[in-house]
Structure formats: structure tokens, C-alpha cells
Image 1 (cartoon, rainbow, N blue to C red):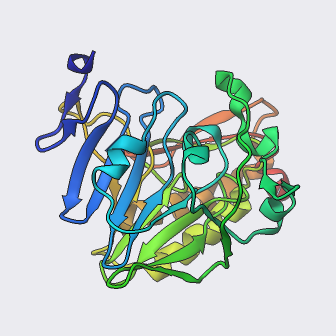
Image 2: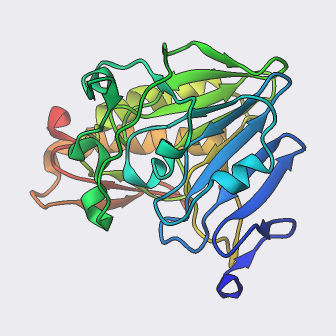
Length: 280
């Protein structure tokens, strides 16, 4: 089964589903190259514990891959509530969630259960999980692993509850679904192009030309090989410029269910009338 895809040099299949890329000795990208969405979750190992950003799809159990690399107490943080990022979440104990009103509103009887509009699991026949939130973390606050710190950034556009992680010391942004190579989804429920533009501008100012942006999805490269998708500040600038052009042209867009717009050779954006409603 694993022979059906090609992995870039240094990336190995852990089992018949998950492939692991060692970004450095304490940072691991956990990929699902056999999954049609080509998910990537990220594990960070620090002096006082470990942090898992997203918990994979519902296709396989990710816990073994994580347990073999994590050290100390493990904190799990979902980037947002879409089904392809929330698989396995109920298998973890210490779940930290961004303190956002739309997520607080999903809590009932001590459990967070995302709405179908936030989860979108019906697309692949998945029911939304219910899980206890160990703690809520404010936007801009930092998760501290002793010798590594990750700041929580609110990065809506793709969804209202999307967050990214920023490591200032390592000059790395883990952008989840905010930006990645391929088709960005600006047509799903909760997507907002004004939000996308606002936060693309903010991210562009926050990072520099040396910042590595690791993403949650990625297309196969020109060599036909899979690896953790990596972008840079120029890609955020391309997204910002493309969104500004969409805003300028919004009044002339045809009344169609959705459109695909090429932003750059690496990025495209699928949009819907609802996502540009505030610009029309």
C-alpha cells in the first residue's frame, strides 16, 4: 500500500498510513500522503513537555506515532474544528483550545462538540467528536515547553476559529489551513475573504523573508514526491495581493456557486458569493 506514493528523501512511512518527516531533532511533521487531503500534523518536543498541533484525520490512529516521539506531558491543540484536523482528538487527555467565543458556545455539559457547520464531517461520513477542554488559551498567549515557545495567532479566513502557531525564536509559522500550496478553501461555511485579507496583512508584517511557513496540506511537488508543505513570506504577500485584487473586482463577479482564482504558481483560491458578500 505504501508503495503507491513517493516520499521525499529522509521521509519514512511509520506504518501503512503515516509518514514522518524530521524537520529537526525535536520537530516532526506527521503526514498522511495516502489521504486525498494530504494532511500534515506537527509534533514539537521541548524541555518540559511536548505539543501536538492537530490530531490527523479519522482514517487511522495517530497516537502510536506521537507516543514514540513525544517526551514529557503532551499538550494537544487543534488548529480548527474541521473534520480532517480533529480525528483522534478524543484519544488525548490534555486538550488546549483557543479561547474564542464561537468555540465556547459549543460547550455543553462540560464537553465541546463542534457544530456541523464548523466540523463539516458529513462530507466523509464522520460525526463530530465531543471532548473535554483541559484549558482555554487566549489569543496571543504562549504555550511554553521550557526551551521552546509557541504563540497562538488567530488566523480566520478559511474558518472563523482557525489558529496558527508562531515560534519567534525559531522563526517558524505553523499556519494550518490559513495558507498552503494548492487550492485554498474560501468557499466553505464560515470562510470570509475580508478576514483572510486582514490576517494576511498582519502575518506579512509579523514575519520576515527568512520565516519558514509549514502548512497542513500540500500538493505533490514537481518530482512527484510528498513532503511537509513549506511556504514563505512571499507566498503570504501573493495571497494578500490576490485578495486585494478580488476585493477590487468583487462587484463584477458572476453569480455562480464558486470560482477558482489563481493567486500565484503555488496558490489558488476557491471562493463563493457568501465569502465576498461584504465586498460586493
